[in-house]
Image (cartoon, rainbow over all chains, first blue to last red):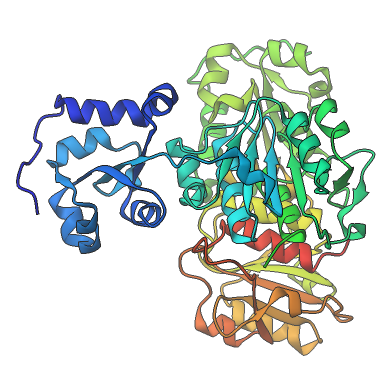
Length: 257
Length: 257
């Protein structure tokens, strides 16, 4: 246990941690992200490198495993400032953002691609489901919530750290390259699409599932860059499914587990 | 357009509507529930009876279809008081809570049963998925979020109004009665369970999918009251799935569409 207790809310380290928590620009510039809560931080530590950790004495006493993160002790009122949510439970860690080599897409067999999915809860849920169902990589096109923002981390439960995430500004271009090596690209779309039941599951060269935003769906350009479109058959009792649910059902169908 | 504009936030009708919004006790006593937002209210009006509606002039101008609800006009600062969320968009309706005859369970072929699912977002998501995937009825056991609370309504997108919901304090007893008429009751459980892939989809006398809370799962008594248990196979990259997602994948597998 380190003894250099941080007792000032104005401590520059604390202010810096808050700026990483709140600003995507700061996160991108410094290659760091902010996570809170003992469960999430310990889960992330399995796959990401912790740079700096902070914990209250009460949190350390409650979860001794946190000592492995070598946290600096903070006073309760400092923890209150660091806490973005009630579930922080006095534990905060700055991790190094994993760097993903885009060349990784050249060997991935099951890929999730998102376009314009702005809601961090939906992006996090889909990352979590993709990791659970044996997908190898995720492509984030324009307009998606940041994978390492606090909200996305919470709903992904740290899956973002265990699944390579590649960013692209040109999703149709990325899909074309995947198709060139035989990967079947399937757009989730309500119209001009086949029901999921009728879609096979056997794609020897790989499959890429492409999902758009809840309200807008995919852009025409992206749909046209795909091999085909699929939809989830539904009764007429609802207008749509929750976006995280719809995407997860598709991921389940094309699973690798 | 009615002209009796309500301009006081202390108007007793407005105060009453807020109490229905905020209090499950009030909702239960009066058989009413509160919904907000033009899309949700118009969706609910297809299956539920509106008792009293309120709308700003701006909301009526933007969505003329709201006139069918015969809303009383309210001033913007009154709408602000009624609004539980930013997405209310100046429209608020008290609906009569649909009364479900428990005998309906005697003929249902696809049933979703929940136990201890406290999170209204998860209950709403599962109601929405159940309606989408052709389930006939929902049983809510002890400890579940109320189906007609504002939060559940938002995540169900009104599906609660289109799917009969039966409450029970004795879920094992309800499951026993279902099994007596040949319905196969399947508990979602991580242990002592079969992977979903190996579970058939053909249940001539019906199937009931039983789902517990994200943290706790089902009680032993409820698991024992089922015919068998199923789990969703996953990689070891995540500890669990989002509860709404996990339940929805099960509902998709046992779908009637």
